[in-house]
Image: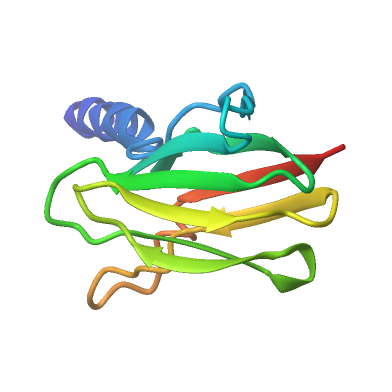
Length: 138
């Protein structure tokens, strides 16, 4: 009987920690064109998440992503490689904001992610769910 109780407790603990570090699905964040003609989006990266993790921008309109790390000692980055669409960057996140500027030239859906990996870990931050989507629309 005692083994059954311990097994049940372990199961409950594992179930409760299964989503650690993963943010719930978010509604898309639609960038607004400022008076200067630029779409600005603030993105925070933290313990295996980006907030927002689904961003919608307009094609052929300049974009500035203002990226930063949520805090803590774990390093994070943001990476998106789509040179055919005018988007190509990899930036290490810091607690101080960093600007990433580009003008998307092609409608489409482009994934971004963190390229970091914990020392001695077989899984990258991307494998842990630190991913997002940049959607470029007309």
